[in-house]
Picture 1: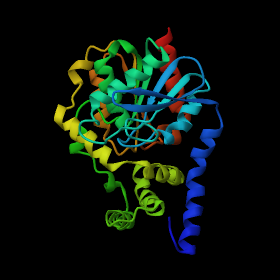
Picture 2: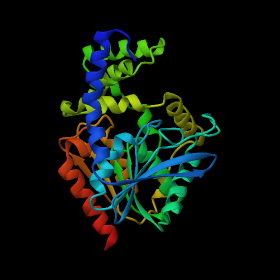
Picture 3: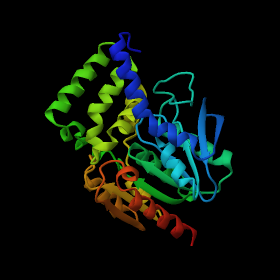
Amino acid sequence: MPSDKKTFMKYIFCSLLTGLFIFLSQIGLAQQSQFIEENGGIIHFRVFGDGVPILIINGGPGMNSDGFSGLAEILGKSYKAIIYDQRGTGRSELPEISSRSITLDLMVKDIEAIRKELNFKEWIILGHSFGGILASYYTSKHPSRVSGLILSSSGGLDMSLFSSLNITGRLTSLQRDSLNYWTRKIQNGDTTYFASLQRGKYLAPAYLNDKSFVPKVAERLTQGNSEINTLVYQDMRRIGYDVTEELKGFETPVLIMQGKHDIIPVAISEKAHSVFKHSKLLILPNSSHYGWLEDSLLYFTEIDSLISLTQS
C-alpha cells in the first residue's frame, strides 16, 4: 500500500471507483459459494439463480472469477449460472504452482468435478477469451456433457491467435509509454495495488470500444497471476493445442460472438464458425472484447436464443 498521504488518497479513490462494479455485482442476486477437494487442490465455485445450468469460464489465464460475478448475476436471473476460480486463482488453492499442477487436462478435470458435484447430466458452457479456449478443450474431451456452447471473444480452437495478437497496438503512444512505465515499476519490485491498477488503467483501453468501462477493466487486470498465465500457455504449446478435428463432429448448437473492434482478429471466430456444424457467428457492432458490457442487449438476447434452442 502507498506510504505517502497524497498517493494513498489517490489509491483510495481509484480503489473505490474501480471496485464499485464488482461490489454491486456481489451484493445483488443471492449466491451459493461452495468448495470441493479435487485433483490435488481445492476448487471454489459460486452458483447464481436457478434453471438451465450454464457454466461461465472466465478469461486470463491466471485470473480469478470475481470480475465475472456481474455477468453471472445477470444470467442467474433466468438460469442457474456458475462461475469458479480456476486452479490456483482466487479461493481455489493448490499446494504448489508448477508445470505439474497447472495443465489444461487438470483444468478440464476440475470442470468435470464441478459438474458431478452439482449433479448435472449436461450443461451450457460459456467461455470468454482464454475461457473460450478452455471451453473448447473441455467440449472436445466431454462432448456429451455440453448441451450448448457459447464462445465469447474466444481465443480459438488452435494456437493461430498467438502469431497475430498485438494487444498494445491498439493503444496510443502516450498509453503505451505509461503502460511501459508502470510495467517496469512492477518488474522492479513495486508490488502495491496502486502500481498494478495504474498499469491496468493504461492497458484497459486496448480491450474496449467504450472507454467509460476503463475503470472496470483496469480493476480486472489487477487480478492476474502471471506465473499461472505463463504455465498455461507453456502447457498449450506442450500439447500442441488444436481441437479442430475433434470438434468437427460436434452436433450441439454453438453461438460464437465477437466484437467488431475486438483485439482478437475476426478470422479466429470465422474459423471456429467453419468448423462447427451448427454454429451461428455474430459480430457485435459496438463492442470490443467485452460484449456484455458494450453490446449488452444483443449479447444477452443471443444467449437466450441459444439456450432456448437447446431446450427445444
